[in-house]
Length: 282
Ligand code: NAP
Image (cartoon, rainbow, N blue to C red; front, side):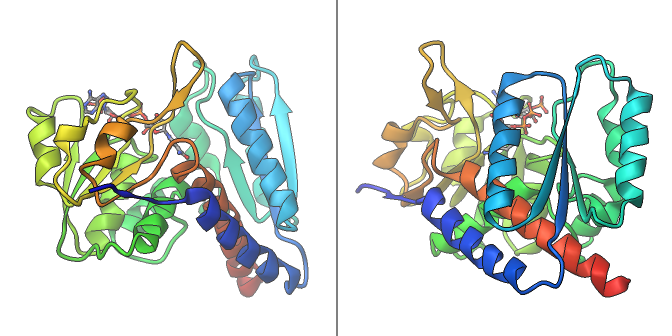
């Protein structure tokens, strides 16, 4: 048996085309502010890709690049200005932030209605409560890929590996809301291979290169690899040993070309959602 490879690039391209059509009929272009503090090379690449994708969809994107020594107070002041700016519908602060800036303080400063990443506690709380809200882009993209894979989520046993507030925890909430029976694994989980074997859906988001081996995967399971890891030889790999898992899984996402492109497409979708909600209220 060889798993079907889920083409995240193709799915993301479809979604982006739909978003561009929605933007084209809006009275004013949605405004997205992307804030990058410091010069982390991976963050710079992510921000550049988001900027390009937003422009291509017709979104008015403004990328603000601040030096690494920007103070927390200066960053909070900028967020205050973006919150008050009527042309800005959506604010994204690229993570990670430099060590002297407290992530929680920055996220809590963003107006929840403009919190396009869905990381504000008000939005995460609404998500856990099963209410409509701005949902973190990566887990949202994963849910869309599961739908693409034709994987019915309700009633299945799903394992999420990783419990970060930006991927693992919201992922577990989304799967729970979709009626899966969810196990949330982390670095203290006792027998991760066995937890994996029991799952019909495995979402790997641990940031550990090729940690999930082929014989961890139950026959026919759907495997979604969120991890992005750069090896010493320069290759980019996920958290899943892709070629080993191909012969066990029913469907699997590659890295690159799986979850990553969907994350960006969902950012654009959230921007349009934030814009239409805000304007509807004005
Ligand atoms: P993170 O904040 O570092 O969290 C990693 C999580 O994995 C933690 O909960 C940690 O457990 C758990 N973990 C670490 N080693 C483990 C192990 N050996 N066994 C089981 N669990 C383990 O990372 P993140 O921000 O969630 O990102 C996770 C990965 O996804 C990274 O590779 C990141 O680059 C990637 N990512 C990709 C996208 C995308 O668009 N494709 C978006 C965001 C992130 P503890 O809580 O016990 O420490």
